[in-house]
Length: 87
Image 1 (cartoon, rainbow, N blue to C red):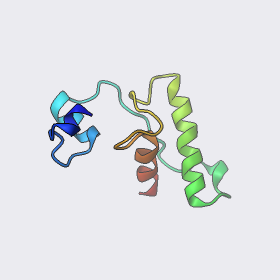
Image 2: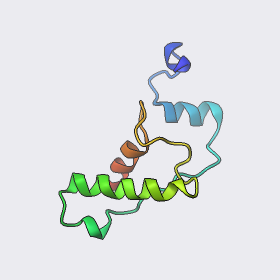
Image 3: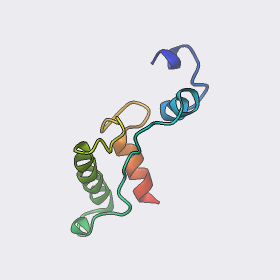
Image 4: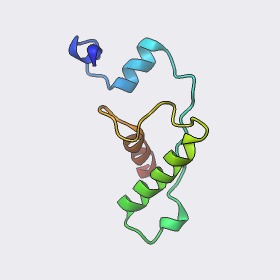
């Protein structure tokens, strides 16, 4: 937040700023590759949300979320996951 207030982000999202200024994260975040088949009968948006939620909860055991929260200002796990599933 201090970086944003001081103007250091320069139009970048927090994730981009952190990677460029602080180095790459040492923990790789795990995202699903496709919508889970068990949600194929749901609407596309709901299927993506449920698939991302399942993966997020599975990642908790192995720290596969890379420190990301489900929803964060500037893009959390949910927003990153949905963008990846949309293709």
